[in-house]
Amino acid sequence: WIVVSNEKGFTLIEMVITIAVLSLITGMALSIIISGVRFFQRETIISTNQENTRFVTRTIGKEIRRAKEVNIINDHTIQIIYEDSSEIKFVHIGDKISRIDNAGSGFTTDISSNIKKFQVTKDPVTNTIVLYIESLDKPKGTLVKITSKFNLRKKAV
Image (cartoon, rainbow, N blue to C red; front, side):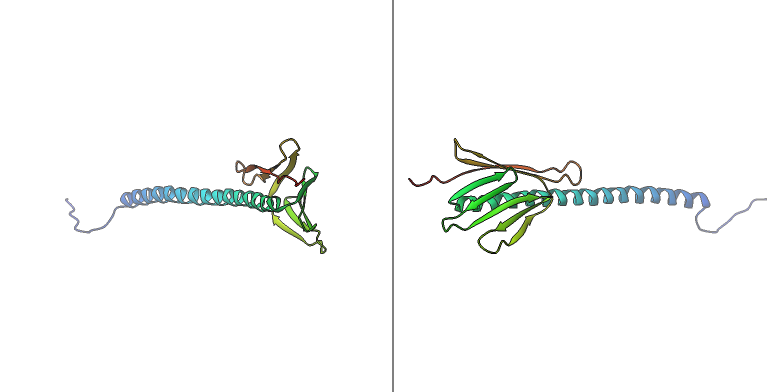
């Protein structure tokens, strides 16, 4: 008894092997996509942290360059006095850097958030302000640190 079959199709074994191979390829593709999305999210956070710290440095630096006098109130507060005797302060409170306008209104503006450390020092010998800013470490391994030095104008005698 010889059975000859002219039926066309796939056997169960062929279907199982095909499904296994497709599952393996799909799993690898999803793994690559997921790691790419995580990398993009991490890089976006790092970029935001860098931009926040640079913005604070640029903003304070611009005001220091315009100043008649710069006073360090404490290691996290800087007072800037202008030629017209108006003044502003930059203060680190919590994770924010705030600008306080003391020219009458006392108006406060948060200029940045996610700031872990804000330290201001003044070197009287070189007449230099040193500004150190450190962002919050979100996610781990993305800490941004910036140190900037600003030379103060010489006072007219």
